[in-house]
Image 1 (cartoon, rainbow, N blue to C red):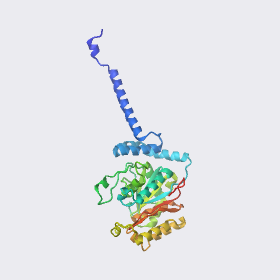
Image 2 (cartoon, one colour; image 1 turned 120 degrees about the vertical axis):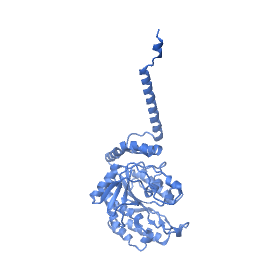
Image 3 (cartoon, rainbow, N blue to C red; image 1 turned 30 degrees about the horizontal axis):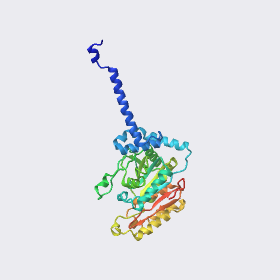
Image 4 (tube, helix red, strand yellow; image 1 turned 180 degrees about the horizontal axis):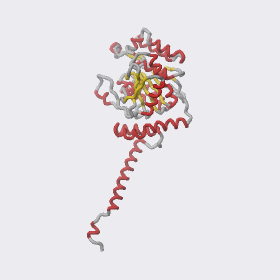
Length: 365
């Protein structure tokens, strides 16, 4: 018969086993919840990045950052290897997006919102890039120096004023890539362009248009986004050369997007408020831009330089910051033809959207 002391003593080995089993059960439960929320589709680079976006939507920037540090570079490199093995040697196209103001992300009945969505779906379903390098009208660096965002976790910049408070609470899930940022820096330096890496958020010229084109729930982009500045000049040839310098990234399935406006005169909005009829210079400059962009590549650079000398140029663009991104895009296009996908002339603005180069699977745009 056992003593009372024998029956009262706990079994340490059994307690440790029970504790380990409880921890293992909780871990399995957490993994099951995450797999159910985001889906398990293998360990490819694309799926790693996609799940990272999902984690960021669920847990926010800080929690996703822990995962990001482990997978960012390896994910992009794996994607490069997969692309090379598949024999995919077609260059990515280049897109110019007219991004409008931040109110466009709420105006889902506006034709420009719908068109940005169509372009976004073309990119995610047909182009399928492994990363995006984007230039926005809202970031100028030095007169002879370009800045590249090297941050892997990128917040948003709310660089607009006088809008309702909820505009400044908007979110857009995104991640950067130091590996892609370094590719940009190397390409610029090889072209003799001064460049430096910085840590910066995405401005609204990027995240507002991307929120329309790549709606996070219905058409997520799910690849790293690296933003690059413009020069702090109004020199069209300098910006054309900037595009030429990064053109070779297209051979690595990296998509180049440039974001501005085809016509952009905020001062004259007061004369067209509530009246969508285009002002005379909106029509004339919008068509002149189309003529220049769609010239044969050998003639295109000079035609686009001449645009800024037109008598209606300063009416269409009191400042050229929203026009120069398309010069970067045209430079990056190389020998690819430019095509206006769509336009809407509206008061003192034009929403023209452009693509340089072809898309596989017969684009319908």
